Length: 124
Image (cartoon, rainbow, N blue to C red; front, side, top):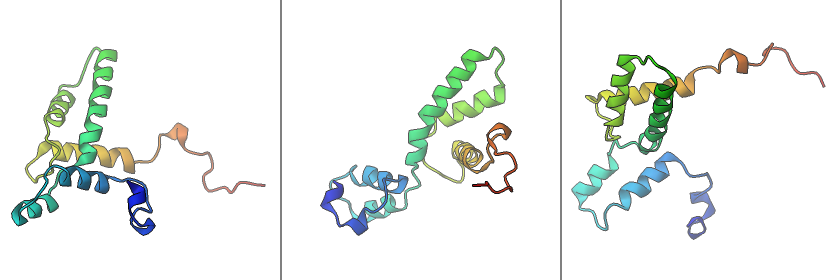
């Protein structure tokens, strides 16, 4: 498929924007203008759809390994599991997913993974 397009159009690897575009555009053979407009402005998250099953697997493993499970966390996971992967202002699961992504990808690594003396240059 990549070879069907000029290099400047496919220079990067596959990303969420490309995957969601293919997903949405392959759902219909033809679009009315209104359907196209709705599709273009969709807040569907393919990253959520791809990631939540992995979070659920980790949650199940966690529950098996721990006899006591936090009820609030259980409720949050139930919300996340029932989510349709569409971001809306009212959506509690979309907020939970956003916060999870923010925590996973913007926090510093645990202390044991941080380099000692990060300001010190390596000697050759």
